Structures are given as structure tokens and as C-alpha cells.
View 1 (cartoon, rainbow, N blue to C red):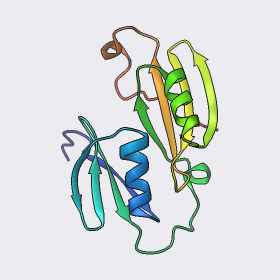
View 2: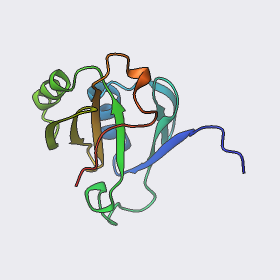
View 3: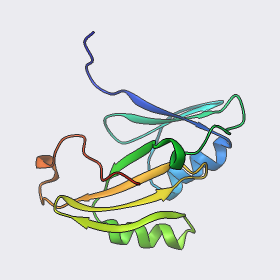
View 4: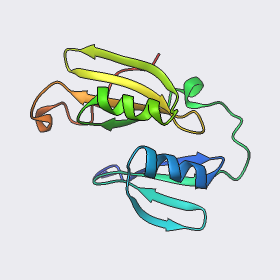
Amino acid sequence: MEIRRLGSVIIAVSDLAKSVKFYNEVIGLPIKNQRENWVDLGKQGATVILHTASKPINTGTSIENGIVIGLVIGDVESALQELKAQKVVVHRDIESHKTGKNAIILDPDKYMISLFEPALEDSAKQASGFHGFAPL
């Protein structure tokens, strides 16, 4: 099997409109494509796809199952201030490490989102695919 790249991460959500508002308006991911029960968001590379869950989400949140969406951002401190002002739940406040700063927030379905600010000025030199630190 030849894998060329990661295409998307699909997230089953309980309320599509609420989740689209969160990822688009609060987080700032642009909508790439939108259908009746399926919305693609992202800037470049892999997309986040929100899809209405066919059954109630009751098998555990990402806090229990360890799923984390990683976003590389420019300034984690100002981002966290903005998000707190919008009443976004902070699962773990900012931690500083040799490779950068990281915080974890929760989306409306309690999926974890890691906000990672690389320490290197040229983030292209940062380890490819690295988006933060284990949440637990």
C-alpha cells in the first residue's frame, strides 16, 4: 500500500451547526466544502471533517479515548486568552517545553484540541507532524 498523505480526520459530532460554529468561528478553520450533514474545514494539508453522528455519542469523549486534534499556531498565549473570553473550556493550560508551548482545549463534544506554538522561529524546521504533547 502506498500512502501519499493524510487526507482528513473525520469527527462524529452531536450537533453539526454548533460544531461548525466552534471550528469555523471560534477556532478559525475556514469551511472548504459543506453538505447537508458533512462539513470539511481547513487551510492546507489534511482537513477536519465534521459529520453528524448517526447514533448518540456515548462511547466516551476524547478525554477517555485519547483522540487529540493538533493545531500549530503562532501565539498560544494570545490564542488561549481569546478562547477563554469566548468561554471555551481549557482542559490543560499552557505548558512550556524545549520544542515549544502547548495548551489543550475542548470542543463542544469534548474532543481535545492541542494548540502548539513551535519554539523554532522557522516552524518549517519543526519536526514534521508534531503538534504538541500527550494530554494525560
